[in-house]
Image (cartoon, rainbow, N blue to C red; front, side, top):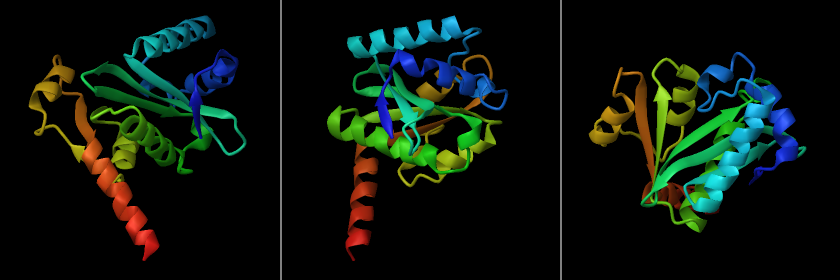
Length: 179
């Protein structure tokens, strides 16, 4: 479902990214395919430097359908950015990608906290993240970060996932399945 980023998938991803239903909500907004290639190369360099972890989201056939990144990693904490192409909306890819990525981050990479900033008018993303049992609304829990991401205007809600909450949720699911 997830794999390290590679250049050969950039054409497919760029075509999905520029869709008007997706493009306004992505973190980096390349104005051309070449700019997207450059941004992908930058993500690969940042991953080598330890300030970013970037993965391509794949469907069951192994085709690229979106990306998921942890960026601005400092002190085992970072910000999550996820996007999926419109043909794959509503099929559960977002949740499965996040769970696979959080498993890597919290169990293999020793990340402690993942923040998610979501535009207040992006109802689709807010509903998707609020379905995850280990996500907390953090506007009041982390006011310094909430104020920082809303320094000019109050456009974002802040959510967070803690390693302990994610692992406890995984454990509860395993216990539920076992009974």
